[in-house]
Length: 236
Image (cartoon, rainbow, N blue to C red; front, side, top):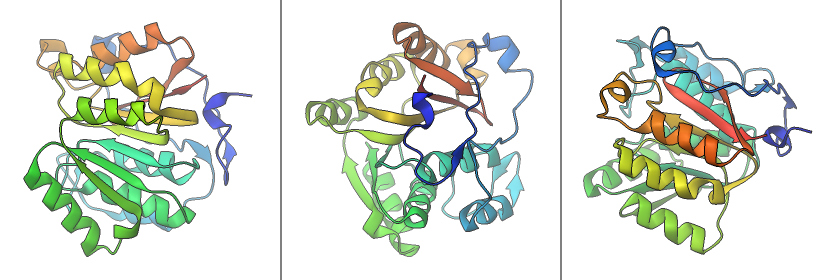
């Protein structure tokens, strides 16, 4: 059985086949729409996210953020229908944290760990979580992402849903990708934001290159889709 879906406690697996890593020019040609990760009927969280207005291709809601509808719905899926804790690296204003916390609340357990280096973003994220009364599912860890990931790996923590949206430069992306396979639980899923952003082509971003290298270095991992501007990665 595909490890990607072994831990889904609620929904029957959709089990999309692994995909080859598309070359970057092909990725830039079109933005892929949301496809449910698991075979399940939409719940209240899906309906809420789908109802948010969209401006310039991004959801326009509070707290603010830079997520496309497909990003937000996929993020909700990977936390809602896996069974462990969730991790995000880079929380900004708190949009992704609140989506992950909504998923934890909907499935009745687990916590969301946010790793954020900027003290102001830490404050804003915690305020957004509290405003929506989601604080019981949230933990903020302030500091450098790579340092916090090393600490989590040393403690042998594991997460079934991981969202990566921190420093997009190549060195930081490579550092994160060197540790994430140690932190991803069996059946877990990772979502890498801005995988198909055009700044990867200019070298300003290194997300595409880092994820491609991680997949080459870890054959047990595979690419399962490119929803919105994200790469969906999990165990084979």
